[in-house]
Length: 361
Length: 239
Image (cartoon, rainbow over all chains, first blue to last red; front, side):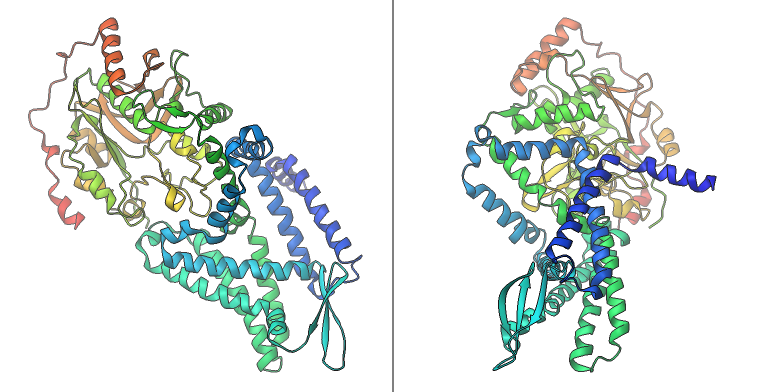
């Protein structure tokens, strides 16, 4: 009993309680949205309840991790600066034009041309996986939250379904036809994107020397395997009911459900967390744009402009919060992070020259 | 992939600025064509000194701690790696914070790349690329015993002082026996300096005022320097 109490106390000590609070509040809001959005659970599909629980658990973990992440001094600084630059027009003369946000969203999140420059094959694989996953999430989440459901519509002359969003009828869909097929087979379409994407990326991971040099199983292969298992088992469900008269369907449905739950619970902890983290790169675009026409920090050793002044100032503060003291030895003059990388290397070489009794002079 | 990782030594006084390490480093597939080693001319107008710099793999890496995206990780061997591609947002904090001026941001691929002591090679029992091509042994990879035997007039240390900040590194730097830490100083003279020429002038004034240690007091060079010749087994291993 005492051991159990000690273990619990240990885990409680490991938790970051303000983040537990934030995550609990946000998760409570999600649960509320599920209850309200499904009209008091009237439209909630009880068969999907396992998925809903996994989503809520994953949401809690994502909110918790995000919240802990934001407490890191450098992250906190960028986060605050990002919003500050957004809401203080005096600071963002360059940001008035929506072009900056538009370009950042398009290039960094939608087109991801930086991945293309890493390698076109990698880009293709990543785009297929990303688009497939986003499509699958966009279908799965509203369905398991009871936000979207389908009702029987007209019977004559053609069968129709009524699409209801948050309990409001928004569209009547004929049961037959290409568009309806797409709507009802959205997850099949998604799996046809994710599976080839995983194959391309997996092939690259096995063949490309740069990748094989640094990859790890848990970090790089596990998410690919999870994505493959989810997409392939989902695809088999469709094959089973469409072509095999439901052969093995119940077992497959169970297997698929568990694989999705595993993926959802992996989401906050592994590589896939970058889906939530990545939008922070928009803040970096803002930061750079806001400083584009300001005086940059100049290196006192080499004279080169090497960073925005705002960044060297912010970093000085952040390094202080991290318990580093890189201030000048005599308290006067620039801090070490106000010297450019090349300037630092030159001064290090000088320091060595001094250690060698000026042998090089 | 479980070979023990040995020690890496930098001996600044041996660098002849040939840039072989830069060329060797560029061949790695993880950063295709871009060198992660720097060789800098320290004060080209007055001295022929050149200085190589690889990642020192700090025990408490400033780059990783100042990364807002949590993208820089140290492995179980104490090697600090390039930023994780999915996380890195190319903000350049690491580049500006690193006390040794090592990380390089590649804007076009949105990633920080740095020397990882040739993780792929060292973890398989091979030497880092730069140490296999360095003709003078300025960059050396081996055991502590080997180093002590080969360079009796220097000693390896891994303690650096930048102003008030003390940094301990995984890599070793060779210094005379009476030195216990490398003190990197950037005295007041840097305040308001505006470039290399200005710096050289100010440094000259500073040393004239404070006195330069006598350049004649030099440690004797060893009679022969067998370590300067590449190891006979080196070529076979490299191939």
